[in-house]
Image (cartoon, rainbow, N blue to C red; front, side, top):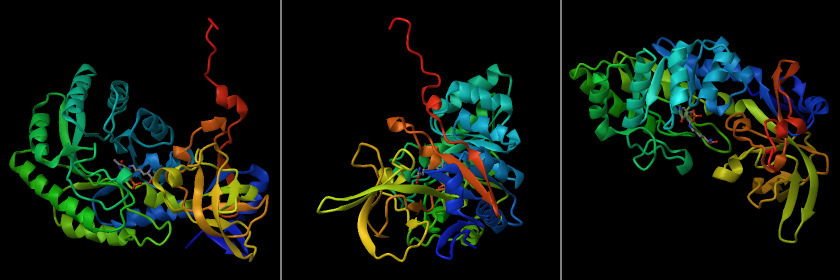
Length: 417
Ligand code: LLP
């Protein structure tokens, strides 16, 4: 069930008219549907019913504490890529032994933090990192639980910026070098090899690339077993795509069936790191029309949200549907929907057919729950937005809108000036 629907030509989030939220909180703002978040998490989790698994929500997709806390309460684990995400995860209530740590550039202080907290697994992405993890674990008198992130050289058929599992990408250790890496790891005193990890990319809309990668990993688990290296956890990463426009990605059940088919009776605990598929379509960005203008060759709708609030259209030429919060039945025009930032790349949509709008009208930028607020910035000293969570006929602020004082917090004018 879609929880962002029109009733009497008015866009609702669950049982709350979006307009009511805007009246109280103002624009621009992010709105998340609790029912959708919960349904998506459960749909993914339940798709693997009966399978030994842990679903670790990929924090990077949306780190709001309210969202992290919800998935923790639903029994999930967490996939992190920084000390900051570890801090948030612990604050949101995750048991540290349900947290997996990926990323090519883990700093020593971050590694130490994760070792001290006792996370489930480091997904190690290079030999140099492996060495550092071993050293730090030794110093802290710990044994570091490690998986090696393998780069299987599989084309995920997605946007080049979010493809991660090909040789030309910076992620993981080459499949050819991975066996040797495991042999080295197995000999390190302060490392406990427990897993195998892989994440091939994001917004993947077919099951094929996942299956291709899994065949490779499955063979590798057998080869490792032959060398007496036993893999307990197989982390398959995230990457399942969603519908922004006309994509038809596999649903979680189809995805799960594809995985189950390949994995067969391999005796491992599966770890998943879904991000976008859980939160992407559970959130919208609501913005207000400030001005309209025409240059003779183009119509512009200038709104109060910009690339600093939602960078996906600018960065990836990503499509987000844009809908009027109140459906006016007006005729459609073709326009660029642009923000207030002083760059021509600051747009939410280009040459988009959209109902004629007026100053003060509200627009909803759909599918903004993943990689929305988390990628926002204070560029042009614009305030970071409020985030609101709706639950049935209630809503609550999950993050306050920044104030001007927040902008200069921590800044110091040196004495010598
Ligand atoms: N695990 C790892 C190791 C990852 O690098 C990622 C995403 C995920 C899991 C979650 O992937 P998901 O299920 O969300 O596809 N900012 C881009 C997406 C970047 C994805 C980075 N890694 C965007 O807005 O499309």
